[in-house]
Image (tube, rainbow, N blue to C red):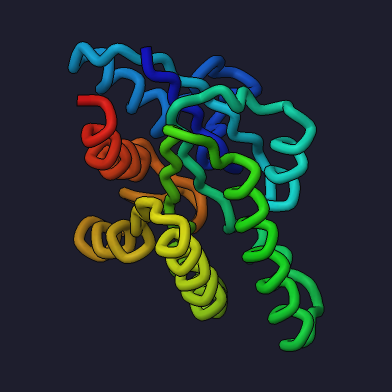
Length: 206
C-alpha cells in the first residue's frame, strides 16, 4: 500500500482540523475519492495546517509531527509567506531577505523530507487578482515560483504549475467560479488541483 502525505497551509487543510476530518473538503478529499474509484492501493494523510508558512512546516517536520514514513509527499506552501512580505511595512530589501529566507527554508524542508525511494511532488503557490491589490503581490509570487522551480530541478522533483492555469480558468469563467477571496478556492478550483496532482501521481501509483 502506498502512503501519500499532503502538507501545506489552509488550501491543503481545507477544514481538516475543524469540521471535515480527516481529509478536509478540498483537493485532498477529491484526490482520495478519485484514487478510490480507480482501485488504487493507497492511503492518504492530510497534514495541512491553516496559516502555515514554510518555516512552520519545516518546524513540524523537524519536530516529527509529520508521518515521515510516507511513500509520496506533496507540498503546497508559500502564499502566507507572500502575505507577510506584503501586508507589513517592509522595505524592498527586507522583502528580498524574506524571499531568500523562504527559499532557504524550503530547501531545508526538502532535505529533511528526502529519503530513498520516496517521491516528493512540489506544487506552485497561486493567487488571483481579487481584490485588485493582490496584483501587487504577483511579482513576488513569480520570484517565489522561479525559486521553487530551481529547487525542483536541482532535486529532480516534479513541480506542478498552478498559478497560470487557475487564472486562465478564472478569465474564462469568472473569478467567483474559482476563488472565494483571491487566495482560497471554490470546489471547482480544488477540483483542478486534484486533477493536476492526480496526473503526476498516476506515474507513481499505476
